[in-house]
Figure: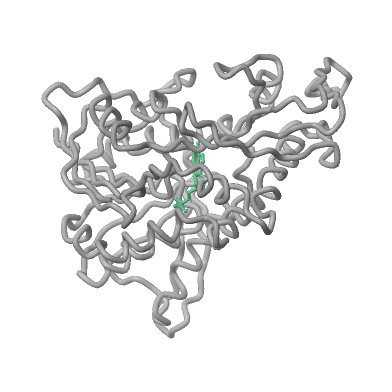
Length: 383
Ligand SMILES: C[S@@+](CC[C@H](N)C(=O)[O-])C[C@H]1O[C@@H](n2cnc3c(N)ncnc32)[C@H](O)[C@@H]1O
């Protein structure tokens, strides 16, 4: 379903940094140009990837790994940061997941976008910045960008994600294989290398805030990786006028479980890859992949599917001193203890209504899947 929402009479205060912790400073930018040879003899086109990371610190997950193993969360579990999933290999594995027959989310959303992208595109004014938070493999946004291109709308599309090489690869594909023509004439595509928080800071920069309109895109039920209270805070972009949001509301335990635990084992490989990510961030092999397995569970009470990493035998995770690589401290994770890695929350009708109320937004347009569980929603933020 796609819904248009506008700000309710008493909008909440916008918080550009809902997780807190990091100062709101303008990050230094590095621009990397990647040359892509189009299929035609038309102009050579450069894809620019802008590094908007906050002083490169946002990607050092070593402190979060350590802290997650030392404390328990509100569900009583020790944790590993879900950001460990999204390295280059993880992004490729996730792309494979979107093609598995069990992963209904992608096909459902593609069907909605194919049916409604022309209508959505008509509402997007020339000069608009389209900022996609967690752009992934760009399969879905391509549908909307093609509709914008067909309508001759000059807009700037910014794909924001965590891995620069994947941004290069996916933007390169987007540019070169469209209808065999090789490139967009009206839509300008760019990459932003950084986190959601970095993106919020970037969009608030004066040169971007001056642009006539901004549309934030959050597709693939990406918002569902946040618990409802945090999801509401994430719906409060500082200078965005509209949000287009894809959200999954399926609470059919069997269907959800199958999507995140496919028979071919792609989800399993995706989750185990987080251990490689953890070793890469720590700089040594703290987690021995062969000692661990994956357990997916549907938590009906919280309406979330959870992926856990579970040691097959007692696993000792050692933390070394950063510089000297000396033994510093170790933590034991007992055999069968579930380390929580990532959640996929599902938002039913009531949850969605609560989300709009708490974030001060009002739905203006919505498109629902045939079974009513998946929706594309357009939220208008007019200030
Ligand atoms: C569930 S995938 C969705 C991808 C794509 N939007 C889709 O619909 O298929 C989530 C995406 O968000 C990115 N991501 C996750 N956490 C992020 C963060 N904190 N900052 C930036 N990107 C993030 C991941 O790398 C991944 O590409």
